[in-house]
Amino acid sequence: MSEGLSVRPLDDRRELLALMMRSWGSHRMMIGIRTYDCAEIDALALYSADGLTLAMASWTMDGPYAVLCALHALEQRQGAAKTLLDAVKAAARARGASKLKAMLTNDNIPGMIFYQLQGFRFSGLYVEAIDHYRSVIPTIIETGYQGIPVHDALELEIEL
Ligand SMILES: CC(C)(COP(=O)(O)OP(=O)(O)OC[C@H]1O[C@@H](n2cnc3c(N)ncnc32)[C@H](O)[C@@H]1OP(=O)(O)O)[C@@H](O)C(=O)NCCC(=O)NCCS
View 1 (cartoon, helix red, strand yellow):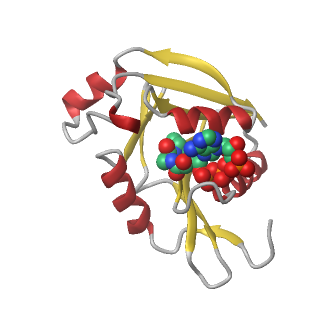
View 2 (cartoon, protein in one colour):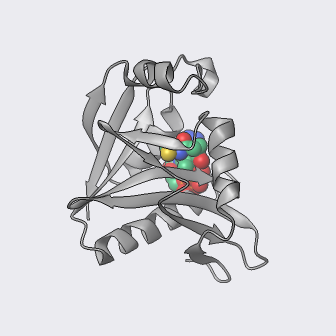
């Protein structure tokens, strides 16, 4: 990690919840067939030397696996998400997780590039899962990256 940066539990969880509401329309996230409330599970952040939040992540254990429910960089392409993901992987390993799972919606091309370059492999496709989820939580976004309609969930995982 670059000098001066630090990873620690998120100081103010409202920062993550507000970002999730803006970018996703809920602070609940679905991974596979389960949902997780980021208001209730572990949250880590990467901070700059002067205390600015550079990236935030939310994760928890689910049986033998860890699930990454949110990963957001506040400044893109500065390596913040990669640094924080490495910290989440270390924390998950320390709790005994054998795999880390994540979810992307079908529009999220930057996320697909990012996770695959970090070594994640696709492990599931849930066609129309987001449409079904939206019928329960109507605030879930309708369109995402470059206006692509959001319908499906893609699950990824990496061995720890
Ligand atoms: C996906 C996301 C987390 C990546 O965060 P980031 O801090 O910009 O990523 P990093 O700087 O650590 O990127 C590491 C590598 O991933 C790849 N990458 C990341 N974003 C990319 C993009 N938009 N386009 C192409 N490649 C990308 C690059 O190879 C990058 O290395 P490089 O910049 O040296 O070329 C960020 O775009 C984000 O917050 N998106 C919104 C939330 C989200 O969709 N999260 C994922 C699902 S929860």
